[in-house]
Image (cartoon, protein in one colour):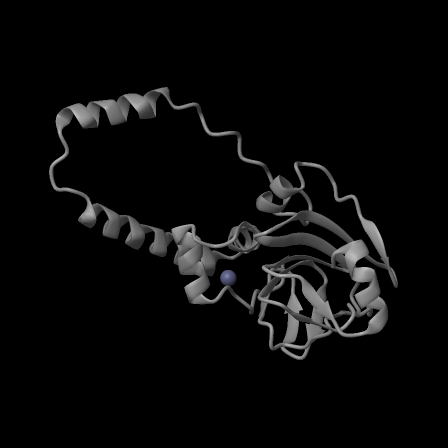
Length: 211
Ligand SMILES: [Zn+2]
């Protein structure tokens, strides 16, 4: 993996560690964190700080009966499901979203493909495949979009993003990501609101493809 230069903003890592982010964003961040030592360390620090804060707020004395019941409940809890392993370019959190299956791409035209992994009131999560040198239609967002590069690279007005990099684009960013020359770019993108495409044709296609 090339060197990661675009990371998750600190306040977003904090929200991730606290478990308060919409699910599509949480998956993108989990995938980045699985690839990035710096962000993983930051999340662990946040989680430790959050835990320390919680225990400082907990009542000082817990009755021994309550403690026994807690430990009994922990003992009888079912084991956590086996952790999904990463496969190829897909980190474990992406494999989990794919339910362990390879992507089932849908053609969007211009060689661009996508698979929607989830779409609901919280937002959407999808995989995008952009052929070498091709651009995704220009669009703005109704909210935030997080894009993690899994293979290849893309560039837009914000710079170049290689494997492992994350772009955080707010609704005032009007961008047209273009895949690099080294090969197809595959990325994982999460939004918390539908994208608004500017050109007429993509706008007509949007209800069909939900891009
Ligand atoms: Zn990072």
